[in-house]
Image (cartoon, rainbow, N blue to C red; front, side, top):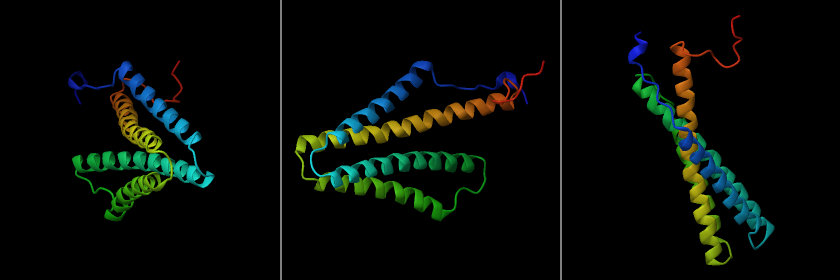
Length: 158
């Protein structure tokens, strides 16, 4: 394999900083909104669980879509159809239930808008962070395959 023509693309440090900063800001905004949520403790607990459900479902969906794309490009069998249904269904169920909980909650419309926007910001930041982390991982693997660096945890030869 000719390594002279191999291009390993990495995200820039400012991009990585922006992605992490956005994700942390989104988490902070959601946490503030949920911490000061007026109403019952049950409403607050439902929304916290909904946000975590959406967050984990977004990361699982991002990984699943990326894995599916990679296996198709390699000509291999991708995930089983039932797994795709579970992943996509879980994401849409998480989003729908959280949206329903937010909509039916008996709080000021401005507060609902803040919670809704911070929630959607968190979901979009989650997809961007998942892609950034996966891109970095794939670039690391390519460098290892090409012998440009050693795997993490491998002792250096002396």
